[in-house]
Every structure is written in C-alpha cells, then in structure tokens.
Image (cartoon, rainbow, N blue to C red; front, side, top):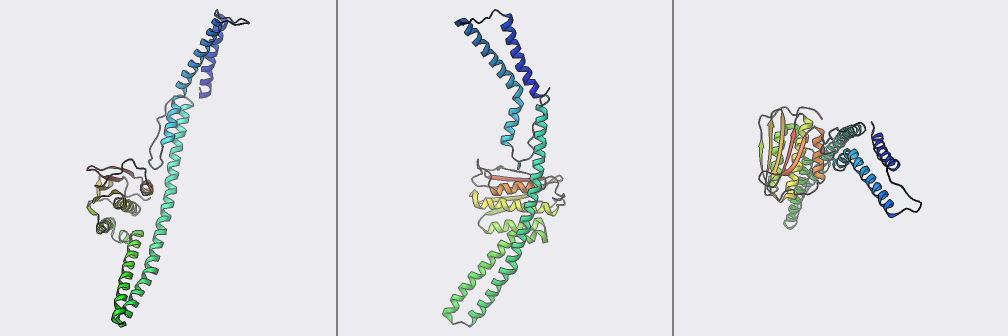
Amino acid sequence: MTLFWRIFSLNAAVLLVATAGLLLGPVTVSTNFVLTEALVLGSGLIAMLVANAALLRFGLAPLARVTRTMATVDLLRPGTRLQVTGRAGIAELISTFNAMLDRLEAERATSAGRALSAQEAERRRVAQELHDEIGQTLTAVLLELKRVADKAPDPVRDELRQVQETTRNSLDEIRRIARRLRPGVLEELGLASALRALTSEFSTAGLAVRKQLAPDLPDIHVDVELVLYRVAQEGLTNVARHSGARNAELELRRDGDAVELFIRDDGRGIGGAADGAGLRGMRERALLVGATLTVGPGPQGGTQVHLRVTSPGRAV
C-alpha cells in the first residue's frame, strides 16, 4: 500500500469510528445545543485530532530521517546512506534518495577531476612562462648589471651591487614559485624525493619539519603521486600559516596494499573551525583517487591530516 492510501485509510478509519459513535451512541445535538452536548462533541473532536496526529507521526517518521540526512549530507565526505526501511512508498523514497547521492557523488568526482586537471595544466603553463620568460629576462638583467657595475665608478658601483642583489633575490623567488606551481622533482625523481624537497623548503622558512618516508612503498600511479604531493603541500602550508606551530611531521607509510600520508603539528589545533578553501581542495583531490581524508586533533595535540589511498596503483 502506498503512502497516500495508508494515510487516507487511517483518516477514513477515524472518521468512520466517529460517525458510528454519533449514529449508534446516545449523543444527540439539539437545535439549541446545551453545554453537555458541546462538551461531548468537543471531546470527540479532540480525540480525533490526537488520533490523527499520532497516526501521521508514526506513518511519516521515516521522512524525518531523510530530512535530517538531506540537511547534513556533504558530497566531500562520501558514503552517507540511509538504511532502507519502511513499507512501500517510504522504502522507495529512501532507495531513490540513496541512488541520487550515488549519482551526485559520481558527478562531483568527475567535475572535480576535470577542474583539477585543468588547474594542473594551467599551473604548468604559468610555471613554464615564469621560468622561460621572466626568469631568462632577469638573468639577462643580472648579467648586464654585472657588466655595468664592473665599469662604473666606486660610488655608483655599490648602488649597482645592491640592485644586482635585489634582482637576484627576485629571481630566486620566481624560481621558488615556479617549483611550487610545477613540482619538476616529482616528475623527474619521484614522490619520495619531492616530499624531501618540500619538507626542506618549509624547514628553511622557520618551521622544523621532521619526515618519515617508508622505503617499501608499493607502486604508485603518477596521478596518485600528484594527489599525495599536493595534499602534503597544502597541509604544510596550512601549518605554516594558521597553526602557530613550531614543529611538524610528515609521514608516508605503507599499510598492506594501501598508502597513508600523515601531517601532524604541535600548533593550536583546528577546533570547530569550518573547512576553508585549502581543506576543501584536499578533500576534492582525495575523491579523485578514491581516498579518505580525515582532519582532526593529533595524538600529541595540534592537528593531524590523514590521507589513506587504498588503490595507489590505480589511475585517476
């Protein structure tokens, strides 16, 4: 029986009982009704309303679970499904809702994959232009400054040396930005070398980063390597910018056929803060490779980011 007919039957039953009570019972209504008649009819009406409310609440209770799930579901945290219970109508609604979540999560993962692929391509293009255009131009400026400084008188030479040093610092900064946009060491030397270079970069920025990289990692697809690297990069960036931590730890280890990445710090912790753009980006990247990402308090305080990839050899 569908939801409509169940509710209709319940209401019809209440009305039939009330009608039978009026026909067969001693209750009558005078042309000028008296107080006792009004009390009897009022009591009957209240009883009908209470019975209707109880029956409707019982019949529609599964819809409350659907409503709560719809209000709290997050496509970046997949896997939330309702248990299919109830009779015809309610069970069909819950099954349709679960199927809708499956479809939305698949579409979200597909669209996020396209967007992140386009983002990586744009990063490579910008990094290449920084290296080829601006980097070469500044290198030429440095050589010209050196040539002019060698021939200039002493007072001017000192000023030219300062300009030369400023230009050299700018060139180093551009190269650093290009490396962050396009991790060439990841493509050339692999994930372990890229993570070592990444931790060294943050260590020189004033944050003490300790690394633990397991030597027995399974074969990891290049797309999965990129996700692991980007999550580590974003995690350490968040530690340096927001945590107030002095020490951090990056651990990459094997757990059976899975690969796990941990980023821990001794900072103030994440508390109840909402996910920012960085955390949402990490969750989207985790979805691309079927990984699970959890962010919460660390074992020794601070914050811990945990990424687990169950199929590291699978392409995105």
